[in-house]
Length: 328
Image (cartoon, rainbow, N blue to C red; front, side, top):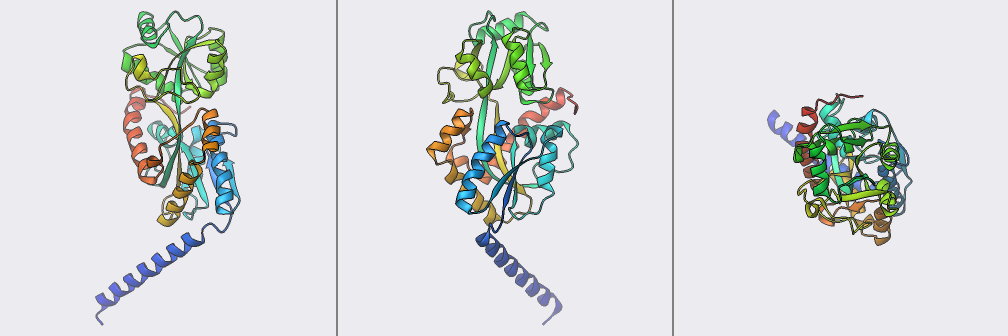
């Protein structure tokens, strides 16, 4: 047999063996504990979502499923830990808009947010709420935008720090409405909310769980939710489209990734588990109480997560780079 034919035969045998090994690995998976890395502190919204998912994985897969909070550098340390891990399905990443899109625009990362990961599924989305101090004269979103235009460089929006999602939401609001105002950074959203309650700042664009109790208590004004549909937990608050700012859709979304090279059968097994998990009405209610909305079932798959991440990169990176934001 000529040497080139022997080489082709060897290659074919290797592919067959590798395919068989991959299928066997997927059939036997998991054989031990699984870790879901959350690149943010315990108690963060993404941490709560990961723990709900981990509970179901323990039951369905019959193996311990742990949530590990690897914090620091705006979430990049935790993402890097998963990027460097073995591609065997035993270490996964519960990433977010911040960790898996925004960081890539202004940080020097030691990994590629797209090429170094295998998408598994979109998980949940958490729209933001546009709110203002109780004494704000504007009674709806159109009036708020008019007030901001009438007070250039005087109005203030609190954020949970530079390069946070509320900060980028404010940049997009200015860009879309032609307004200009000052940002006031805080060490976390709760501190910003305290100053809004005392009228030290004018506006917040923040996740729903923090704002809803204050809205229900009549302590702040709510103008719109930054989504295409109203929040299940607050159906009386209009969407931005209904309130006069069409297309201003921003959310803190979550997705599930594995390291690059994780076998496709394992990815498919995990995707099926996500679909099964969020078909449970009780779990959806728990997530709704956290201000989270589960993505439609047709988007709970690797392809939808890859497309969503790509679109978000195309949307946010130019805005972030134009603002010349630097790592803190």
